[in-house]
Length: 326
Image (cartoon, rainbow, N blue to C red; front, side, top):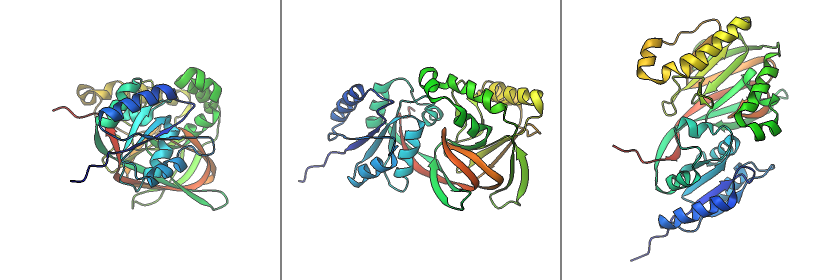
């Protein structure tokens, strides 16, 4: 009888975000307890934020990819894993931890996250893809797991002080929001959802989200679901100070508080669009802008886009989560 070859995990870690000794101790202990082989380790860098080292790990035939880092590291690793039948486990280690939040995973318990990596179950979720066209007509393609944003959303990312972010975490975005709000420019775009007729719009913010929960109890997209084969589109164009107040009340109070319970959703009623805030859903979204616009993916700036095409790859990403109890 041939012996069964033990499974092997690859750990992709951002050295800036993790305590490597603590992480190695937890991974080695859980791997041994689960009967797995010794894990292989790959460190990200400024020149390789995750795609290259993940590709190296996949060439070794690993059975699991554990990613320990922030949202940018998660996005890069997922982009490399796309097309491979290998699950991804999250060890939340950054400021936002957006995918982990939307999966309702433990955020500040490294031993528990590592335990789930080796003993949890896989959940298939949707993966967002986007092909960005630059001003020079070149195109580059990327994955995103949470959202892609332009306008105020992308400018906020650009205006965020990275040193302040390291010290103050999510609170650093408050300063960036204030700076971005003073920007009078709007997005002028022509867009198309699925096979619908093309439309024109002028907005302050355009966000395409696979899921919609942010830190500080902010729920941008209350009906976004990770595995429904659709993304939600949010467009905002508040009219003056009162318009911004109305948007904030809807996002922070109605979405963030009221709609989080069944009774609250019944009280709030149907989600209705207005001149300040508009929602759409679809599986494909194309847009072209009157000028190059800043774009962000999962919280990281990706330069300027003159146009893009975004679509959903339904349930193509397997994420290791805690075992569901009956």
